[in-house]
Image 1 (cartoon, one colour):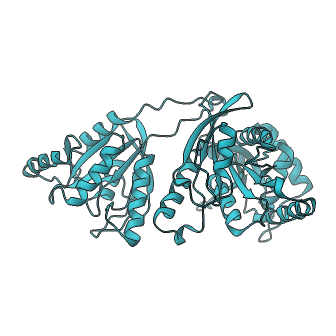
Image 2 (tube, rainbow, N blue to C red):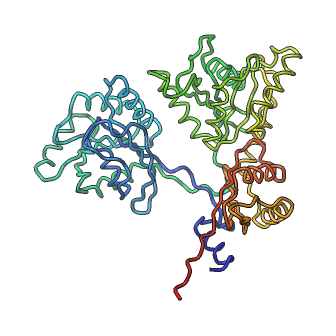
Image 3 (spheres, rainbow, N blue to C red):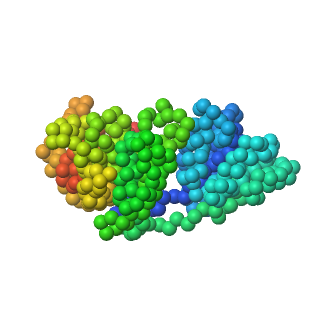
Length: 465
C-alpha cells in the first residue's frame, strides 16, 4: 500500500467528510433502573446486541452509571446501565442508588426492570413511587418471563401503578424486540443539527468550590435573586438553569453545587450534589470556573479546572472578589496564577466581582471567544502546509535510530478540536505538546482544549518468497 493509499484508508476510518460535515444533536437517553439483581445488565446487553455490561448472579456488580450506544430499526440512542436501586440503602449501596437516581434525572425514557419470578417487592413499590413523580416516560419491563405461565404472572405488576407491564426475557431474548419497539415509541424526536445552525442558547456551567460566589454571579447576571445565597457553604444542591440576555444574545447559565473534595471522600447529599454537578457539565458547551481571588489557589481549584479539561468543554476562569485585593496582592496573585496554571495557559481569564457586578461585562466577550475557538476548523490544506514548515524547522526527535515522519494531518472533529497526525512512527509526548503549542500560536484556540493524536502506519508484512 502506498503512502497515499494508506492515508486515504486512514481518512475513511475517521469518517471525515468536510464537504458534508454536520453535527448531530445529543442522542436520546434510556436509563435502565431497578433493584439489585433483577437482570438490568443482561437487558442492556440484549438491547445493544453485544455482551459488554458485566453480568453476574450476585447483587451489586454494577456500581456506576455506564453508557452504551444502541441502534434499533435505524434509530440510535444511548442506554445507561445503573447499579441496583434500593431507596433504603446505606453505605456503598447508597452511593450506587444515588448514581441510579442521577441517571433517571438525565434520561429521556426510563425502563424499570422488575423480576417477575419474585413479584413486586417493597423496594419495587418505593422505586415505582419515585418514578411516578419524575414526570418522565416510564416503561415497566417484567423480566425473566421465560414461558407463557410467567406471562400471566407478569400481569400482577399492574399494581405498581406504572401502566402495562411488558413481559420479556433478557437472558433468552424473548419479546425483547417488542420491548424495543415500545422504547422507540417513547423516545423524543432528535432532529439532526447542521453545522452552524442555531442550536438554542449556549449553555454555560458555573463551577467552583463551595461559597466562591457562583450563585451571586448568576443572580447578578439575571438581575434578580434567582437562587439562594448564604454565607454557609453548600447552599446549592441541585443545578439551577436560568436564561439570561447578555451582549445581545441569550445564554443558559447553570448554577451548580460547589465541589468540596475528591468524589471518593464525599458522602450522602454531598456525593449526590457532586454527581449532579458533573452531569450539568456534560450538557454544556462552556464552563466558567470561579476562583476566590482573595485566597491562594488550592488543589481543589486545580482539580475543578482539570475536570473541565477532561470533559472537553471550553473554559473561562473567573477570579471573583477581585475588588477586595490591594495592589500588592494583585501583583503576587498574577504570578501565582501564571505558575500554577502553566499547563493551561490557553484558559481565558477575567477578574470580576460577582457581588458588585464589577467587570462582569468582560464575561460575555470571553465566553464568545472560547466558544468560537471550541468550534474552529482548520482547513486541511492550510494545516498540512503549516506542519510541513514546522517539521522542516524542528524535526521530530529520533526514536530507535529512526526519525518518524508526519505524512499527513487532518482535523478529525470540532467541539473540542481534535487533530490526527498520520505518522511513520511514534512521536514523543514532548513533541506532540510542542505541536499543540504551535497550533495554538498559529490558529488561536483561546479558551478551548485541543487534542493531538497519532495514527501510525503499520509495517507491511514481508511477502513469502
